[in-house]
Image 1 (tube, rainbow, N blue to C red):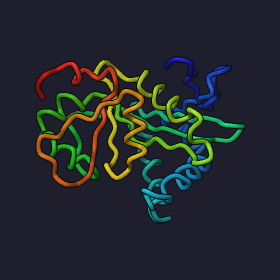
Image 2: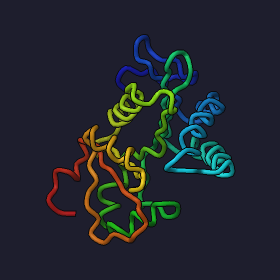
Image 3: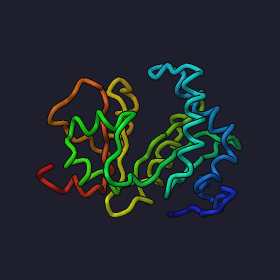
Image 4: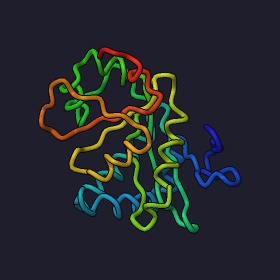
Length: 201
């Protein structure tokens, strides 16, 4: 990981501004991560309830045990201002949650070729008081730089217009879905994702 130190404590290298929490080590910062999640996702356009915040906490406690899981956190003024979580998407491409909508749009052959084996950025959130200061860009770039040769990918929703613009500004690309299913789910591929160099899906 460029500019990052893989430790169980999440201590960053001098000047990096980011800390890395491999696997269950992320539970050491579960409370401030939850506060960032609540700040971001209970506000528009997401409007999540406290039940969904609690579901995120339960999900993170399980997902941090996935092979290759890593969380990144960013500080701003001494407080945790943002975080990202990621892990390699293990083949075959999973189902459930929003995965099914992605597979329905692009087809099993495409998702298994281009998304299985790539780094999946599951959550990326920056507290509203730190937005516009480059925190999200640093987190996203750091995740992308840790990706394997298959690149990185993430999904979002088309109603989150500011989020979509943010990913496009960072050079991420949303491939057109051949058969949109009306779910509003969008995927973005990292700037170096190999699918972007191919003419066919």
